Length: 498
Image (tube, rainbow, N blue to C red; front, side, top):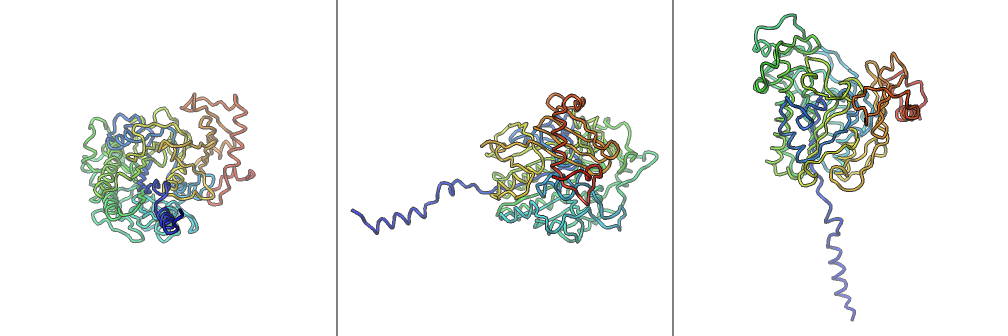
């Protein structure tokens, strides 16, 4: 017998019961991105570093996933950050080099070339999904009053350096909080680029001349800790582009003293740029250990706020180890077998660490050789936030690899260009064949080809042996870039755009 009242009640009840998809919809994670500055591929213990202590990051790698074939989008600071924010590689992104808008003096304008107002950034896209966004560290995509400053490009809160030139000194006279100067009252102005002819009398003499009372990474870290405590009630994106371990060589004495004095048989006098240092090797190690210290404190802040279990932590770098400022990459074996370093497109300049940790979601102890690039993080964060990918993107989400679910799409080609210095261009085909034009200014379109599967050190140019791969690489180099008025490369700009 049909009972209309009962049938209506059942229908209403069914409408009120959540569907399976609604019940299974996870809460979007908090995201912390620790973006180191010039951290080399082997400068963390979990990547084989033997001399520098990084226990917290090593633990996260053991409890999460470590990538062995992750690449930055550039070999210097600003374009890597532009690629992260836009999800576009350096053949498409707006900022492709470190184009300055000011000078080096204390009264000169701050900042690098700004991203335009109409740019839609990662921060803005996450804000649209209900995320609170904060950046703590180095921005480098627009100075004070510009269209590129963080507050108008998707970040609710900013504290740190707007300008990467100012960031060469870890004891600056000021930092920026949003659009306001935050004076560092315990610091005095001194140039971050000095050279001396003779060593100073003591370690204390170096500290007195080249340090101050307010260590910027500590000030920035404290601001981030406070921000977590205030914003733990809804999903947050904490972008932490630390200036460490970019030279100048400066670190708190208590961190420097953790490393052997006999490492440094002579001081660094500034002969390769930046500031002199009494103990250059110990200081460099201390700077990297301070990144680890910072990660430990960010985790503690999340735990205190009760949000650690649903927080994804990513640790990576903007490019490889530097060649300047007293950094001794040979002593630390900073890049292992990789050729090159910061400012070139060989593996040592662009292959970087990537560690991801998310308790209960990422399988502990995983290691992935999936070939990926910085714009992929842009795509990954958007997918985890429940956002649609932008119409134009060069990123592919890493979510299947992170969570061990589904098929991971792969890049057939990765692309890089670097319009400064010698001017360079590179592609990686199928994760194996690396083609590079190492000197577009002097050598033009001359191309080298390396088989990274059999030659990870890029020691044997096989371009004469594999004309088929060279032809494919040349086509990719031409089709995967658009000309840039801001960052011209004359040897390439005369070629046809596809």
